[in-house]
Every structure is written in structure tokens, then in C-alpha cells.
Length: 157
Length: 85
Image (cartoon, rainbow over all chains, first blue to last red; front, side, top):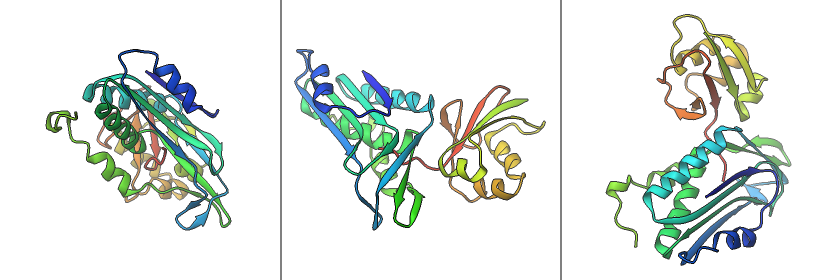
């Protein structure tokens, strides 16, 4: 398991290669979040990502542990960047490895949904009208809420 | 008792500081109580920590409900709902 909160960019290929060395792995699912050039109808020239050092790593660790308890995961990588980012820049990477695709797909989506509502990051966008903090979206809370507790979850395979 | 208080994002900008050590008066024993105490400073504090404002709170780097109890040496953070990913 690898968790990294960093300024630097990341390389999906390198991360997948470093995870896929275990011959028990039959499926690797990944997600990359990118900076878009438009938000709520306004052009975005750049954004700054602020985070809570210490808590961020702790929260990501807890989210990964939660996923590990729900699905059969063989490995997992979460990288989230902070600092100044521009449209097309990569923001976040989640890579999940499992024996079969069902667990890998589900855990990857779960990790992103939980990360969006539980990891202490905040985006501030630069638009032609000035800087503004991104508002949290109700849709993100709803996406996180659909992951019912493990006991109620149908077997994902 | 003394606690460390942290502020992030829009809350940090509004109150004009990211961190401070404060002496909490006797009677303040929860995160909600600390929020009330800080809000009583008035001005930007009144606005940033306004009663109706949806804020998240963390105690020793775990998100907690406002009812969470605080003790000497704790780290308490106030911030807007998160927007990472």
C-alpha cells in the first residue's frame, strides 16, 4: 500500500508497473483526476490545492484501510497533489490491484468517493473575476453515501 | 487548559491566521464550546465561525462531531467541507 501527498507530478505507468509485480494480481483498476479549464461556467486559469499536513495522510490511510476491509485487495496506491496546478495537470491517482476485476473496480470507485468527502483538501480557483474557493458538492456526499456498510453489501464478484 | 487551534482554506483567510495556541476558559469542554468561545471574539471570527455556517471540525486530525470533548494539549481544526480529488 502506498499513500503519498506531494507537490510533484506522478506517472500512472510507473505506479502500475511497481504494483503489478505480484503474480497473484489479475486486475489493476486506476483513476486519475485532472484540472479542468472551466468550473461553474467560469474559465479557470489555475488552481491552488491546500491541505492539512498530517491529517491528510491519516485520512487517506483510514480510507485505504476501509477499502481493504471491504474488498480483496492485493495492493493499492493513492497519490494526491497539492500546491499550484493548471488545467490538464493531474491532481489525484488511485490504483487498486486485486485477483479479479470486480474488487478492483469497486474499490477504486469507493476510494475516490470517500477521498472526495473525507480527505482534507481544498481547491481555490483562479478565474477572470478573481480567486474563489470551490464549494463542496452535494453530489459528492451522495456518491460517498451509496457505499453501504459491509454487512449490507451484496458480494461484489 | 491550552489547546492548539488550526484553520484552513476560506476559514483561515477570513480569520487571518492558520494556527494559534490558546488558553481555553473553564467551562469550555467540547469542540462546539471552543467554536462558541472563538466566535465571541466578534468581527471576522463571528463571521468565519457563524452558527449557521456548515463547517467541518477535526480533533487530533480526525473529523469529529461538534459534541466531541476536548482536553489540554489537543489539536482542533476548523475548515469548510473538503473539495479535493
